[in-house]
Image (cartoon, rainbow over all chains, first blue to last red; front, side, top):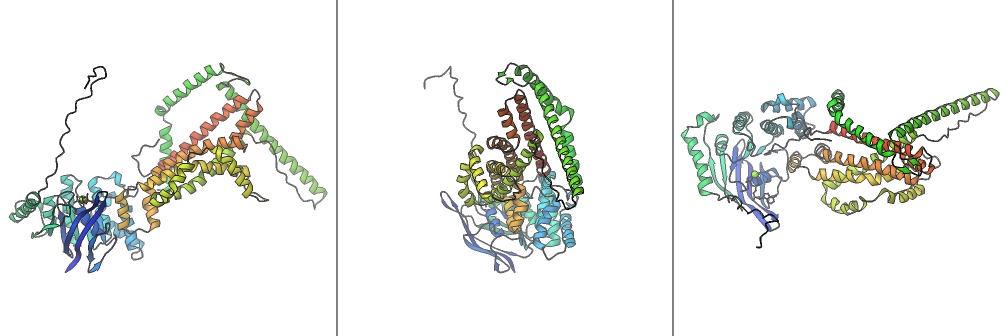
Length: 282
Length: 323
Ligand SMILES: Nc1ncnc2c1ncn2[C@@H]1O[C@H](COP(=O)(O)OP(=O)(O)O)[C@@H](O)[C@H]1O
Ligand SMILES: [Mg+2]
């Protein structure tokens, strides 16, 4: 049964040089509890898709259906984990989650229940120890954990993550991916995650949605990842199925949708202007 | 933040700013300045005698303190006499209605300092009350910004001296009560200060609010924060550093404007003290004016330090270098 339906979505951005069509006819149906990742070259429109689902952008055509009902505007039932954490720097870890919990469960949970719920979510991402620290006092990986806790604490129908681990070093990223898989095992959230990391996509997803290059990007291929859970990165490394999925995504990205990035040429060495004394007539 | 930790932090800040290492060079600077001042002062001749050097200024300071003490003694004596007189009259005639007359002595230097201080704080407070909400509104809404920007830009550079006659006339015309809570002179000074000093706070608040990160605005949208929570939890905290930059500029301007306004309008305060001494033209006058100049500078400095301390206590960004 479809839980989230991205239905024939197109979007045009007004630019000084006329409208720019970023997405063209993107359709995707996602089941409850499914983990879908979006992969594609930089600038193809992955964030735009996510922002439309989140309600932060309005689609020019088409729309988003959640359980059959059209959703408009942003809301906590579609929680977002932003790429650069977006924690409020003046609030502690606890207060950042508290802001979300208070907002979502106002009138539904008692003070005590809210407090327990905040701690529970911080515990899920193993951040209770830094509860009273501010974002500036914790590492990038920790901030991202708190961002995830904040999103989870809203009990969202859909969890949207825009390159959540993109800015982290490889080790921290692996750690967080494992944490996310653990959490996912317990909560069974519906997740859309953007990534540019092929291994991450195969390791975490039920389906990998590969996007064509923009402008007017759309969905190129969809790959179902049929690997048993729980997944273990070490065991998967030489699992033939894993290797094959990986190869398929790579092939899509680097053969079918090969992007010729204009590599910025090193500037031509311009001769230094001659000194005034040695001025030569040109 | 608990009161306890606020105190410990305040203490740390104080301890920090009075350590020997930090005081050495400032002290050296002051000593060199005093020496230069002393050696050059007696070479400047005016119609009222030599330009006052540090020693003269110190003497005048002492005499101002003495004047103040003397004036206070007179005041106490006056009230004692009045009380005795009233008591005597009551003994003669039990139905006598006691008359309490106020003492009408000349305000001393320290009375003038006090007057200036509360006037500047009132004017600055009023300016902040107007400028912060208005700045937030301007920062949040591009249309309001476009509408108000030309007006702000035109009024911002207006000198206090130009406002003063207008404010004086408006206050005289509109503040007519038999039993005024505030003196008119206080109101004119205060409003002039307000009009001149609100702009930096207004502009900086607006810029701070307009510069909120898009990501944080998105967080607010996803959480569907209502506008009160949005402003109190997202907008104000992120604009606080800029707001304080503006507030400190405003307070500095307020203090400068006030002295000028008091001089020009002959309103009570340090400005009037300077003007009176100038008109007086005795041999002590220049020394006394110099005392006033130093006191004005010192109070301006203290006001800024107090703001800085409040800024440090309220700032969430501990990496920001505040000076
Ligand atoms: N608000 C916007 N206004 C104009 N163009 C935009 C806007 N947001 C995104 N775009 C354009 O849409 C395209 C897709 O952007 P984006 O979704 O951020 O790519 P990705 O996340 O895949 O790297 C890019 O060409 C980008 O310049
Ligand atoms: Mg992106």
